[in-house]
Image 1 (spheres, rainbow, N blue to C red):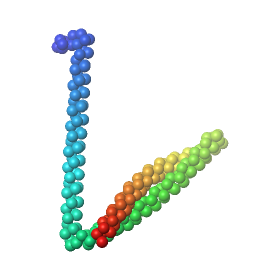
Image 2: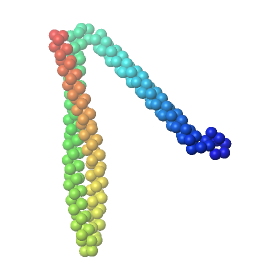
Image 3: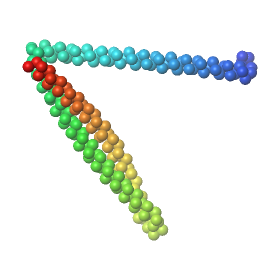
Image 4: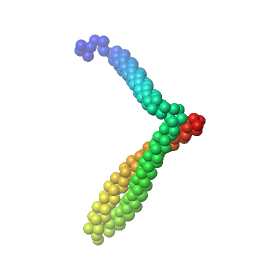
Length: 185
């Protein structure tokens, strides 16, 4: 090891490798801690900004309403409208999900049928080359259709779940506003 007299023996090499590994471990640990602290800082900042925004919205609505009772009625009306909007979104998403699911099931059936046709075509290869080629094309198309509808089905399910959560949140908001309105009356 010309130029590296401190790495003359296997023991020296092992020591250098150990120190290198310690250095890397320390840097990885510091990097992870830095990332955690950065994430915590920006998350807290975002939470504070959202809290400030909704506080300002609340105070502006309260000052426009002129009375607590009118404010509660306004919040209740807004919550009802939001719930209805979420209900429409949820129903639309559910309908799309059902259509995608049914299409995917039909595609699965078509794929299985195409697989069976392809198997029969392979068995009768010597007698029917053209039939086998057509069945293979149908199988490829059925697989492609199945894959495309599977993606649509998953996306539609996620959309339905998203709007379902939003709808449930709207119901909770309406109920909370209704309780506040009831307490105000």
